[in-house]
Length: 438
Ligand code: XIL
Image (tube, rainbow, N blue to C red; front, side, top):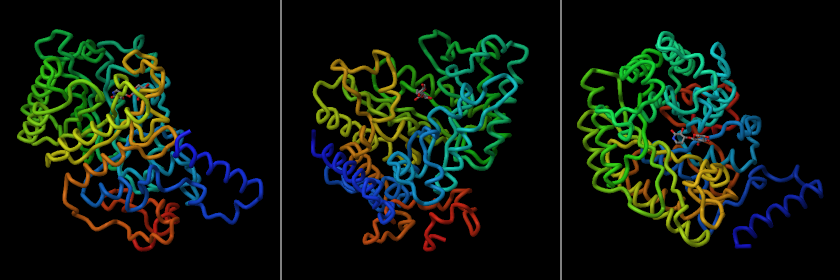
């Protein structure tokens, strides 16, 4: 067992002992959380990714599974669950990993299930975090009824009703929406580069424009993004796809379609070719069209890395350092999120596909916190990249009192959050906002 494992084990044993001795009542809630250092790096309060991003005017965050969040604990200010605490303290923007997609939201053609999506919104309102919506139109994770129910005749209404209902429900509360996801696929052989998706088959190429115009009407304040993957590298295949994506967004802008940003998913590999000049040019070309670029789903696949945890961590940290160094240096990249917060919950370890499996059968380590929710070298790499990307523009949203460790876990509000702005007297979240911030 390594040192960190030992630390955690000791903590667990210690907690067990405390519970057994009935001593829990006298322990401050932070003590029940977890140590604030992992391989000697502090990562809470002023040392958190949230704090570093916030001070530099960046939105940095992670994809979340709302079902895992301790809502009651967060509302009462007593949360001790490490996942909940990491999500609250390491991000100033969140996105639902799955809960706002068609499949989870649409159990039947006539019904919506907003339970998980609403849960995320409630959490973010309590913690003063922004939220992005993902996504309103995609060829995957469609509900099972879609295939037998959608026709050319009803498809326009199906799409626009969904967007009106979903984007309308969160109107004014979201930072941005991924309106259309992964609509480009050069391998499908069309001159316009579009993917042969169910939406294309039902509605023709104009479905993209319809989705954006409908989203703009449903939530005029959310920034609207086109999101895609496989456009980061300088390989021939990715350079071609990147060019097709650029042609698409240029077409949309030329037609006056409401489009504010391009999302680059950034599911990167720890081995093999890395992003470079082509991506930098793409970001600058996007700027010339008046577009921002968001890093929407970053993680680093370690399937190609030989060696154990240490080798993986070093490779992953280097990719984060180089990639975020490259993209965050561009002034039109104000938002970056990782696809999950820890290796304990990552789609790369949930997937059974060969593209996600390591030869030695061990789990992947793609994120800034490991399977025990302890910071990895990637955490430090991300924080350093954030620090170098921008000058400090805002004083810390909270004056941290290091002699009161409980404070180090306190979420703080984000000044430009519409929900945060409402967090006044009488709000259930008041208990977790210190008077200093009001
Ligand atoms: C993934 C989720 O992480 C998984 O839990 C789910 O089973 C499949 O979808 N591109 C996207 C994301 O835009 O929505 C995908 O998320 C990952 C690839």
